[in-house]
Image (cartoon, rainbow over all chains, first blue to last red; front, side):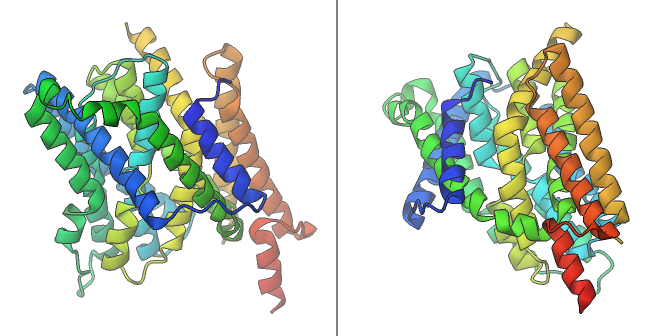
Length: 313
Length: 70
């Protein structure tokens, strides 16, 4: 198995934390790295959008939106009927698995770049589209039939840092195009992998810190947090094949279907569903699904995409 | 109460192990998915053993045992 260099940093962070070493990332540095990655991904996607924008994007965007709406409806009954979780916890966790993780997306892009696999470069647009709908569905599932409705803070939901920075980067990249962004692109493209490596080092530490919580939750949480990404990846990959995406595009939509939010969703759902036990979805997405996707899932999705594309053509 | 959860985990582990092993055997992917399936199967099997009285001090089994004593 050829280990991607950025993934090696993730493993390093996990290993260091598990042996008791304290690698400290200040809150500012941690937020700075996230901000950098969001802007870099958004800018690159915006430039691609300025070159390839067409009406074909509209049905694609609608289908991707449908994916985000459908995933919580698959996760929710699994958690309710098999996991026998209460309605609020099941709905909050289902929403996390319908929403997406930009960190996972960044790792998938880095893998495709390092292996020279082409993909539809306007994919960051789909990341923005997938971030929010599942959270609204989660709140609906938790509160349907209740007389006392949950307080859904649309301002918080739509203007969360992830959405705004990604959308801002997309917009600037789209308006400025290749020539306009030429002055800033060297910073964002040349240092992208280095920043991602540091981000993953931090994530590795955070994931390992959650392991005791995983042990306390028992086997079901782990089973769910591995099965659900595979289900999401299968649906996302099938949808991308249906839309005639490239190999890289199929792998990316599979990755988005498989990823679970650990930044936007916890913040929005924590405020809207104060009775939800937020440690359940956070542990599942951060300590199990994120490492699974980074270490195993993304290479498998790419291999499956390659196999499917070759079989279809 | 946990029978459904464990059945789900065991079935999922077996399915992932089977699919991962077959795909790796065909050379499509490496063995990582099969390893994950095997770990998942083992994890659920250990919890099942713990619940059925073989008291393995692992995962939720230890907690379940302690709760039972109270």
